[in-house]
Length: 423
Ligand SMILES: [Zn+2]
Image (cartoon, rainbow, N blue to C red; front, side):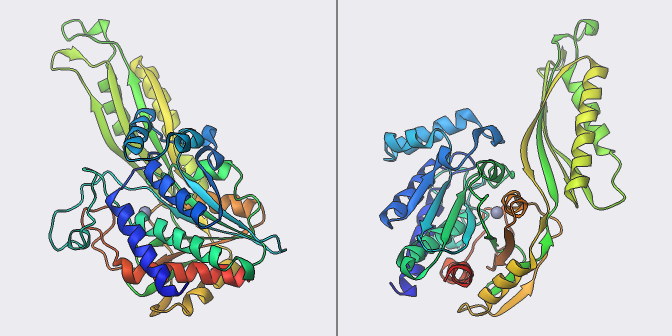
């Protein structure tokens, strides 16, 4: 197979995935697409419950997962395959060469966002006729490209299995958005034997032709759902009720004025609050979505502990019940110099790469850090990089990636990295 074939396959795969976007924990068609291909390539493929630890799953909605499985069935995903997944998405390719050598893993994420894709005729997906077929959902962060690159790497592994040593794994991680999926893959233990690990994201601060290599970065974060349960009553007899709405409002003000931390950046955001029945009714329920971030894992833990303390106190003050649920979690990233240097060298010789620069993200969060931490805890070395594209900003309906140019670059860095460890 020539490199040209990889590119054509990746672009075709990416466009199919783009047209069929599925959000976190609902990627059943996507998982089937991946596993079917891996098996066609003759690679060992694990999927669903085989790569996910259910006890560590965060932010999964059972009803949404049920509906997504139903749609997958209607779209031809075999019942037997859905049964094998056990209700969970995600996959992993494994190449065991049988020859001594290191265990190397790369990770891509596969989920989309609940964002309506633009109808603008200028938009790449509209020009190429592969616009999202699922209203309200689109691959507005490029994870369709990531998945296609992962499959491209898998195809390359299958073609080069006789000239590689050790073991190579390709992780297809579900539910990156909301930093929900990586913890459950890490908890399954599937990266515990990994000596070398690389993860990547398309775009971000890197323009087309640029590869950004990351030494450190990302804020640690914890995402919470919070529910208050009060007692409904008529406004004329307020002593008979307990207002979840008032408690939620007071919680917002309290959390908004949490003190920061002397050792680094902190963030707190209450992004959503739903409450109330009507004008003259004491509101019995409130539902909130909130998050905290910190420049280090310790600072984020401090913020998360403050949330728990505040919520408990507010519930007591207003006499309501509460349920605080962790919906997602990511830690900070600190790359291992040896792995980071290997990625840098790998990038330099990829056709189409104009520059390789250091790129250390200070603000966002990315749950690949959970897998990286697990690898490092077990003595492995890890790195994270960006392969560029020209885009108007992530998480927008007009996000675009110039797949014909950008994907071969990501693929080139990954395959060179694997070659440098396992050839
Ligand atoms: Zn993303």
